[in-house]
Image (cartoon, rainbow, N blue to C red; front, side):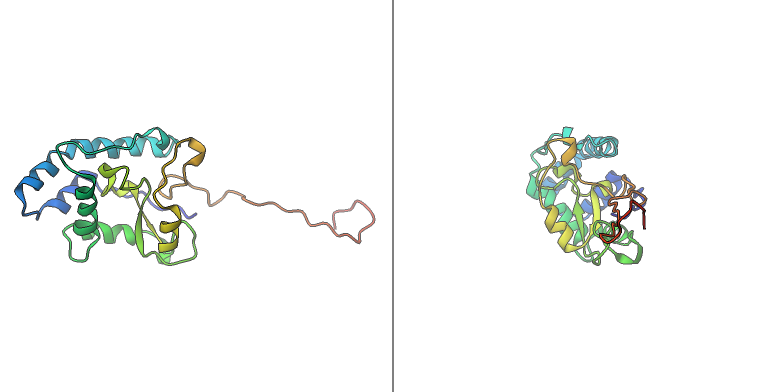
Length: 184
């Protein structure tokens, strides 16, 4: 995994940009009424992710009559879609990896944003920049919609975890023809 600079964009600013052109005033009012809930969820995520405590975040439903599907549409139609009002933030996140390589596998080209905690279970985090990781399609699909139940099930996060200098594998070569205990 490759470390990425943590995005500094405020979740509420991103959310407001995404919903600014909603014509259905009832929907817009219900979404606007969720700002504090979205802010609180993003702050909780930020405080817990670096400490491997995301498993303590409870999956949530939205309040004020906003459905999970409506929140998913905020991301899909108002952030990820070309010419969407929040597309500038999507593009900014997509441009974070060096040479456009997926920070999760370092092999393939970034082609999507992965929701670190899935939008189906955490709709308050659908447009939170801290929850959105640029990734290749394969890494995004492999991770899927699983949620951690314990600390050891949490996946590494490129904005918070720096493992680039960590030795993952050590080996010792042994010459089977060597008769003495030398380190050839």
